[in-house]
Length: 109
Length: 134
Image (tube, rainbow over all chains, first blue to last red; front, side, top):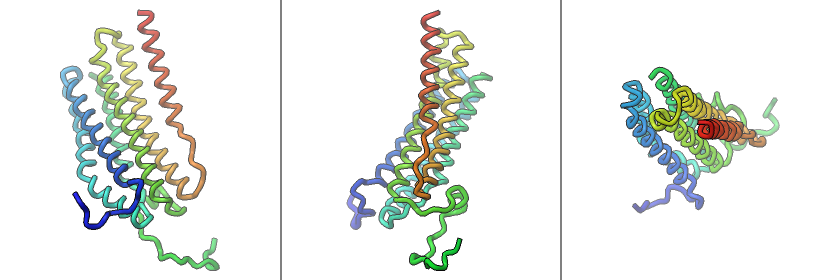
């Protein structure tokens, strides 16, 4: 895909690397969702809660990738990137939720 | 503090949004490359904690004929707890690093590094003892 105009001039490709890091995290969440489903017969229905949280988080990353890449390449171009507090806090919140729900499933199930 | 003698040359910076202005107050916008690098480091920690969470859930089923139930549950809870602490710690560290960069202060020491190392060593020791004395 060729851009008629390059979105940014950063030779270190920081926006691309950051976008790929989000993509890896999304894939990790998809993998983790699959692992949760795999142990459905052992842990029972409550594990579906963990599956729901991790796949929702993966979907949320997928749907916001374009916005984040746009913001960071524009930011590199303008030498000013606003810290993405929202994405960071939501991602951490989802992971903490997974841990809490997981402890519940292990202790109760 | 007055700014009257040094009139700002740049126009007022655009709003960064309510949450960002509350959690990351004051200072100046750091180099955008540093902000993105900080974000990637946070994501690497999140992936580490996801691995621990998946391991915690899987250990119970994987090892049902190897470990006694209390050991199995204990290890699972340790892994899940560690995953939780690491992901919360990663968000806190991301905020602290972002604040230090805004204020051009030295970066804080990562508390989650000794946490991960210590808990990893502890879990390995538990498994080792259990396997040797079984």
